[in-house]
Image (cartoon, rainbow, N blue to C red; front, side, top):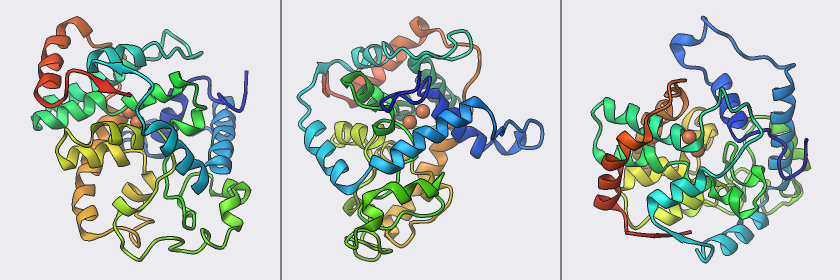
Amino acid sequence: MISENAPLASLDQWEDDVISRYPEPEHKSKEDYRNYDSPERDTVREFYRLNHTYQTYDFVREKEREFLKFDKKELPVWGAMEFLNTLVDDSDPDTDLDQLQHLLQTAEAIRADGHPDWFVLTGFVHDMGKVLCLFGEPQWAVVGDTFPVGCQHSDKIVYPEYFANNPDSRDERYNTKYGIYEPNCGLRNVHMSWGHDEYLYQIMKDYMPEPALYMMRYHSFYSQHREESYNHLMDEHDHEMFKWVRKFNPYDLYSKSPKPPVVSELKPYYEDLIAKYLPATLRL
Ligand SMILES: [Fe+2]
Ligand SMILES: [Fe+2]
């Protein structure tokens, strides 16, 4: 069933498509799973048509007003993860890992490489913002590659042709290279398309080290961390911090293994990590 709220059979379809666009280097020649005629590709295309049409500057400001009040729910961090895990997709339950398993696999891969514990915790929480779906938000306002709003859309963003449908593309305040921004003003001054990255950053911003916050906030900003097409808005500090965003990305994309982690074995370690950095409950 395709609807404007849920064009994708599951949120994973977006991530699977990202992996097909940015395959793990050593797997590139071995397995080429780009198939532009597949039915999945059509749903992903429809997803981006909606995302690029509706993610305007005004839409983003409206969502910021709506969700950054954090008046929807209050939960312990592990409880928020379990809440996220109630997100049921129509996708094949035999082959797809649930949200908690993706988060644990990402975090465990980071831990196995000996990174600092706040980096591991970042892996564990990085998609928690997808609870937006459980608050009734359409998929195209939760996942998908993110991009700056209020200035010209880069043609390095996936399916750039759909920005022709976006009213901002015809608005002279927003359709120039810099739009409402100053050259190299720093991303902290830039509004990004609305989704799980920005929402999680806003939930976590008082608690985690700055590199962790960059990873959370920009992990879906592929047109910058993979394509560098918004250098004209970045400042020196952003460039320093994006080293961390790039360090994080392979763990997000390539840590998926069909062997599901044993949640009960890992829970004590993650509860300790949560207690070290985060408050007892989070306001969503
Ligand atoms: Fe994500
Ligand atoms: Fe992820």
